[in-house]
Length: 216
Picture (cartoon, one colour):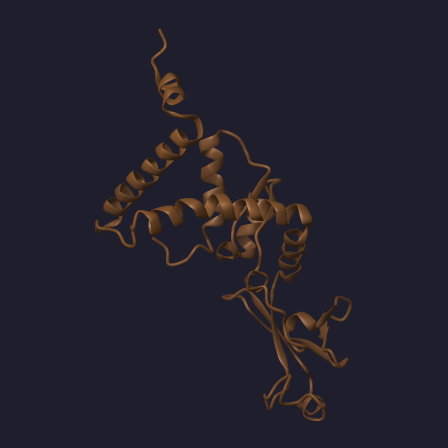
């Protein structure tokens, strides 16, 4: 009943592990689950996490002055802009989990040939980074690995199939029931029916009956 999936990754993985009775080795999801703290909570369980960032999911090249073009200088705790000017730490927004970096003097940007393109702010260029930006970059690097890309393609084929079938083929565009219990019952019937048909398509009716037959 949440409006988005950002806090659901850890919850879903723990529920899956509980159902299977063992911990998975790899956890994969789309960018809707890309919440660094949630990804870290799963990674700390010894599970490989394959989740693209929102920017990676767009598959679009970033501009010459995008945040990712600013290089971090760990020794000075600052970011170096494409023209070589440092942006130093300014403040932390703990509610949003972000740190703000900005040029010390606005004149640095005003005198830059890219002023107006890089930034139009009178105070000069500022960038916002996650407090734990290092973890975010680590997850992005894992996602770029060839083996991770292969697993992600499998996720697209398998995880999206049930939703596509139920929504488009069966025409279920909205819930008929109201209230959380009614909706849970309705989605339970839909997914159970999908799973039964899927099993029949994979192994056949005869095998399914044999598996379900009571043992003597």
